Length: 97
Image 1 (spheres, helix red, strand yellow):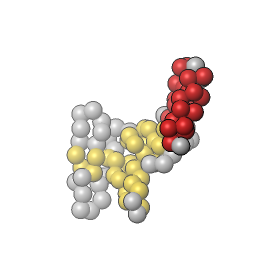
Image 2 (cartoon, one colour):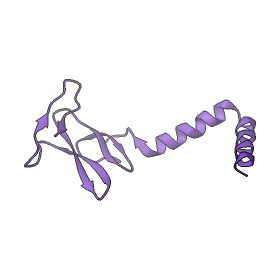
Image 3 (cartoon, one colour):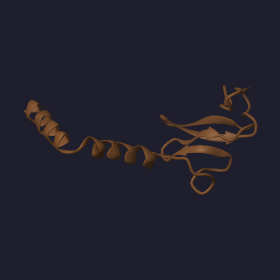
């Protein structure tokens, strides 16, 4: 049964051109990560994800991962909350640790 499903999936994928498969995978990635500025990302965020919030902050800001059950949402802050300290990185990936 499982072998039949794998064979069917291989037939479908082989019937699609390689470029069609690449377009499909790129479309999925583009839907999840936005590189646009302020309209889709929170203030201070350079790059964000629909599911994970901010994934890269503007320079001089720190990224802080807020926990919501098992999910982590990235937030950009000018300084880290009490109990955390800021780690500056020359590449601009400043984090609250």
